Amino acid sequence: MSATTSVTEATAAVTLSGVSKVYGKGGAVVRALDELSLTVAPGEFTCLIGASGCGKSTLLSLVAGLERPTTGALQVGGRVALMFQEAGLFPWLTAAGNVELSLRRLSRAERGRRAAELLDVVQLGGFADKRPHELSGGMRQRVSLARALAQDADVLLMDEPFGALDAMTRDVMHDELDWIAAERGLTVLFVTHNVREAVRLGDRVVVLSSRPGRVLADIPVGVERPRRIDSAPVAQAAAEITDLLREEMRRHGGR
Amino acid sequence: MAEGSSQRGAGVATTATALAGLDVLDLPPEARASGQRQVLAVAWRVVWPKALAVIIALAAWELISVSGWKKLIFPAPGDTLSNLWGQLQTGLLWHAIGTTLYRAVLGFALALLVGVVIGALVSRVRPLRAAIGSLITGLQTMPSIAWFPFAIILFGLTTQSILFVVVLAAWSSIANGLIAGSDLISPLLLKNAHMMGLRGISLYCRVILPALLPAFVAGLKQAWAFAWHSLMAGELLVLIANQPSVGVLLSTDQDQSDLVSATAIIIVILAIGIIVDMVFGVAERGIRRRRGLA
Image (tube, rainbow over all chains, first blue to last red; front, top):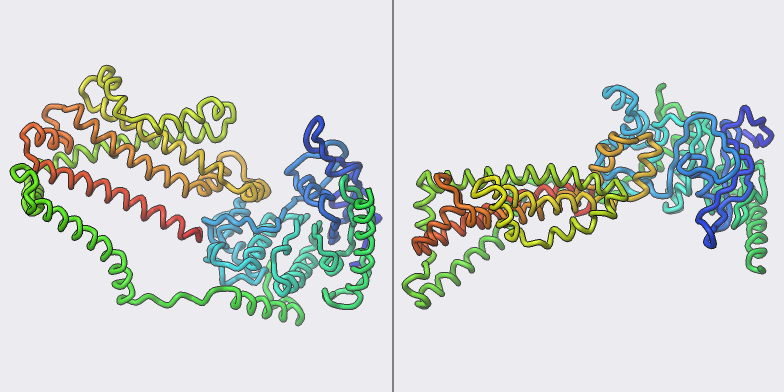
């Protein structure tokens, strides 16, 4: 699956055209996103990267429908699920209960069966009855992924989902996510501040500028799959993007 | 749609094994199976400090008694306990306990209703909160006994008077527990609930109520203390003929200067208060443990 950046808007999974988001009023205005345009094709894995304050999380909130753009047009084709850096599981429910809460449209028996299936997908079949506090951070994040998958979403939004995990767990999660996204043909918008992670996962890496957030660069990732985060091609592609980000930070520092 | 690791390629199988290995390393070792001996050990750990406290209190009481202070009227522990035992054999004390507990449960249930409705409204409706949010906290500092003249003039010397004050004393703690609990719900949980399509009633029942349960139970526990205080005050102030209650028994003992019986009744009041408080405590700890907070 190589980069397909030239999609017509009609077939795109996510289209932002000239989207701006302004927080606050009067003197204390923060322009989080400025005239940002971005088109994501169905089944495409897009990584969003940028320095602090580039409005990465704002962008996801807009696509998720948690917030509305101040100006501009936003189109999302299909259902959307959102995953955060922290799992945000409901602590009074078991792992299975958390997943089932996303399956309310199904009958009770069907719900249980489907939740068990989804926990199997994230390799947590044996932990259905555990409560969140009995699981490790990585396991909680996998329950959170199962819960997002349960929403039967076409578009999966991920806001630094592996940022709080140790390197070993994160590597395995990358393999896992790679497989699940390809298997289900998910469109993924993945926010990270880790350039290597972006190159490891993305069909394409979109670099955002800081304050206000704009698309600074849109880079297709040509590295063959399966990829390893410590392989030479990934490292090389990451180095190029890192240079770009350094340049952007220098620009802000000089001001 | 059959989904399982069997369909995945060799690379993915390795992933699965690696994940399973990580999971095992990440989790604490399973707690040792608790046999009967361990249950006894736990029970002993809980019981002995309490038993020791009771023994020390009884010893101190006995000491005061043998020292001869207020010799003629101060009750000795032995006399008091045998008086209590004697009263427990009669129907009167049990009848009185029944009446008092009935009032406690009814008053608490009414306070629960009022507290939940007002608490839910105030926590969800911003202008209402600005209007009466601080009033609810203010009401908690109001000594409930001050309401009795008001209640007695309004309802006379009736059960309604007592219940009126019990409800007034207890509802604000319940409402406050609800409000404080809903303020502490993590925005992350609410965002996730929103993404999962939970809205309105189902959002309230499936996410907001369970999320605020620990604070709510803490509010209930405090409300019980307030209800019990005001119920005792009420039963001493509002004496209703032919309706023996714990308060009436205590009042009668006062009239007859029977300090031994009065002390026995005080022990009963203390015991009921402690037992109910323990029930709330068990519920609270259970909820906290289920969520990994204890």
